[in-house]
Image (cartoon, rainbow, N blue to C red; front, side, top):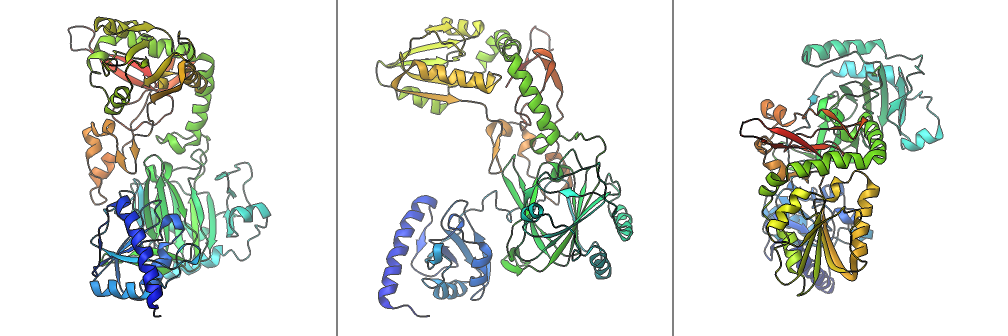
Length: 581
């Protein structure tokens, strides 16, 4: 197809406008002459463009080396094996291919390089989630055919309308117990007459010979799913308290890509599951990652030379084997997705609601009084963004630092009226010694008139309050004392210390967190996957216990105790104080 000169001019103007926006957004440098790199200027993840659809069009005109879909953007990038291939794709698709939003034609331009690979790119990392093992060619074609004949879903009696709706009309068949989608659990009081076929016994012997190191029990529950092209299953984790570790998934009939996501870090890994392969989900991959299959008819997969291609899906039958837990309680060290941990957390939250003041008195007020001097000595440098906020105040403005600690922000402005308040007598004495204007009070009842200050700051304070209601009350108090045009800055503890696969400075201070994990280095992978053991300590009242955090590690709980170690005498012995967070 050849474009008219008028249409070429219109398209060129549209591309120029897109280029200006993309240059500002991504620092991409465009080129007038052909290169190996092409930008799709008006289509990306935010417009609904699918990698598979784009590759299916582009691969007809030239081999593709890499593809980049920046998260949340309306543009994407392609790298080709040569300038000639890139030019061929440009000529075939620019202003012609209708994969844009609502059928718009794609707008293409050349650039000088691909953007850096994102840490969360599912194909950029070769490392599998911890505890995940993929056994290729676990069975041969003869065994595959026997299993397909044994468990075929054509006579499936699953006819419940709601079940079919939940499963997107996938054919499903259960053995041993019915796996209930929606809860990802089973009813242990209702075993099925149909047990796991005896032909599967050969699989357990084969698995034990291949991986004798696995803690293994013969499964008593099997779910068979038949996926036609275009079907999938949402990201999920099998209920922790229902099933033992590991869970097995045997793929029959077709290859497919399974997506693994770790909510705590934002990491995503794509795992290509060949037909006749066995996927063993154990440890971290079983408990701390969700797994799912995106509904589509083609998968994007890497090819041996480092490029990408698309592969059409065929009918796939998956056999998922599980072993039921008998005691209905999970003891894993991965609380984020654990139903047992969540139930315990809800119980502790209820207790905290009743005894919040006692917990704060014991594990906040008392602790900070005792560690006041040492705490002050380690908290001398203002945070730049907080200091910039304080310095932005106009001359004569009144600022109140709620929970001022040692007063390190009360010296950040010479033109504003700086006031501080705190509950700790020890920290307030440090402020007095430094000549600051401070008073003692509870942040839940600030002794200031309504609309009496121009600005408030509260830095690392509110997370020491034990309930949502008390935290809201503290914020309400700051709003009450602020003038109508006033402004406030609040900083609180972040439970998640890792985002987009990048660790916070808090975690990076632990040298073990800075070691790269590589799939071909079992020692590093095992060390990086270790989960810190926590102990529970009674706080406030006898029935209320909270886990003790291990410093410089990822936080595993919503309500916890963070240690502060202090030498209380001239000896080398340290006393540990536990602060509620």
